[in-house]
Length: 386
Image (cartoon, rainbow, N blue to C red):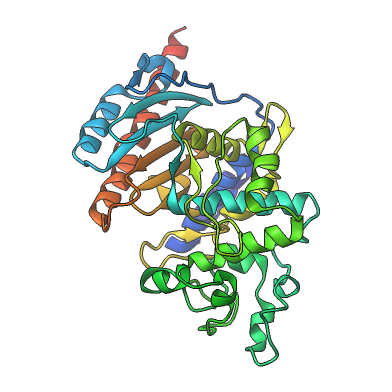
């Protein structure tokens, strides 16, 4: 960490001006180092009794969270009728929880495209277990029956990593194309039969069809359904519940959408990533996969945020933040530098909702992160007084 800060300082003192993009990349790199420094941290997130669904408020000095900012976060979220739950973990424990409406924090809910971040974890585990060679492995061997000789030969160059980073080049099956895709008799064939709009790996186009292909790859490579693999290699070691979720007509579990998980269990999953893939001394996900998943491979054309293997990345203030988000206002934020994990769930079935999602992001940026910053300052002052 000191070395990286030293390099940055040396560049500036030498009069070499870093571009905004280079400076942003440097700060994000610091975030990776903060994350990796936590890889041997074995403290697990405390479980919260299932019967508690109201606000959990602990003394600010213990929480490391400023109570005024938290109060404003709740007030602002209450103005959004679609909001269901807000959970904040700090230093490895759920320190704040508020249930607004809908299913409570202990109930499994549809987290929509946050599923893509979970699916990415499953691919990383499959690579670690030897079922897959790595993100650069072509998907061709898994779909030979669909990749006919008349197809564009570039389709055979699509890799597992291209699917997770939304860089397959195939026509998207999200947005206006989503309905026709999920109404088809064979989702895998339908996606692979789409024309290539760009060379694989060259540009990003968000499409849930890509991550569904990744689920099909997992099914073929492991000899298990994606749900069975997830339950054995992620849910059980992590101590969370991961109920079955929808599958396509061929029985392949939906890759990248409609996974069911409780907000509390989603916090636990986020904490696993924040701690570099370790829980109580057991490695569940390789920390190298987490690092590579967070590194942006492309940028969203809508928000400008970086996108890696199923994870967005951006700066909140000076803090590198990594997050998954889903339709309707489902969020999982990980901010390693503040030892902070935030989960927000909302009604997943309401149409539209851009203003809702934008306000939730602002609440994280303007209330939750400052709450952690000020709470940390308060703890430092108390410890200094001791």
